[in-house]
Length: 351
Ligand SMILES: NC(=O)c1ccc[n+]([C@@H]2O[C@H](COP(=O)([O-])OP(=O)(O)OC[C@H]3O[C@@H](n4cnc5c(N)ncnc54)[C@H](O)[C@@H]3O)[C@@H](O)[C@H]2O)c1
Image (cartoon, rainbow, N blue to C red; front, top):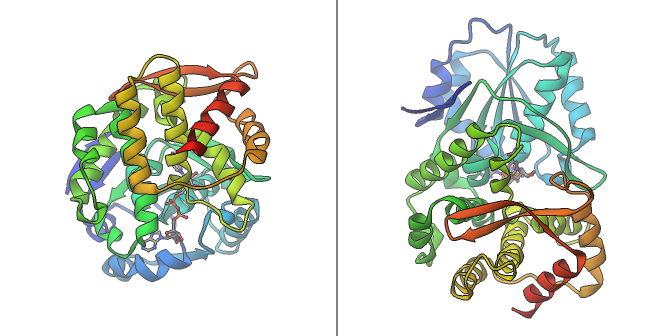
């Protein structure tokens, strides 16, 4: 078992069953495990000896972003009440970013908070959502609007969970891997940009490298006052697009929306004179190769801009984004006008 140590908790990389079994649970009054219907089916079988050894109450919720909301939290809180959970309990979140964000939020707010552990099972949550202490839910169609910062007691990384993850989900998480290389690791970006089929990747190494990028950034700035904003590259436009499509018959996965966001924000970075034409082309071509293009009409631009105006990163009502300065470095606190946003969206449409 490898350990990546953060100031307040450890990330254990290896066999999740073993890691959970080794956790000293004697201080805890009871153990609750939160999962969704898919992770119950696909991921709990990898934790059988832990579940056999430690008495664990399991709460199962419906899967998917559309359930990352207050209604599901109420159901979770109600079950915590029914099971007489107190502040000495431990919640183990086994699932993707939805379970991690929502389970962590429920644990951090129930009776003013009790401990939780993240066991991410999607690529997105393995490399991104499980680390950094951002927890929360969507509200009235706006992404992650209600939430808190709270660190888990531990994060357990086991890439064997990826074996059952559908390709679309794998590709969604891969967007955050690409983002990490673009903001922090030019060499890794060059390696990735040669990849034709993401099935062939060595996930153990990729997840490890990507996690280290995230860990290094969040440790320097846990509350997103400055450098952590780097992780928002692609997310100003991406979240707006994700929120818009959430309400349609064809919702996009988080990473699919972020891929669009990274293309548009690469364009902004080029327009601002940071990226060269060839860097812009390299990035856009690769993202299009992996994610294809999503069509949308210009009449949704207003909604997208409205969504961007709700973005938590904005200050003084200006729309804020993180630019790429070059491949491998970034520039936070960049602003874009509505006119520039429209140009970016038209650029995407023109591809
Ligand atoms: N907290 C953060 O810092 C942070 C960072 C990035 C994203 N997020 C959030 O993460 C969420 C997206 O996370 P996600 O992409 O993991 O989505 P998700 O949790 O909805 O999981 C995707 C789907 O895969 C299923 N699944 C999970 N693991 C599986 C496995 N091993 N095998 C088979 N099926 C499996 C789930 O049931 C679900 O249907 C968004 O809500 C986003 O806002 C949070």
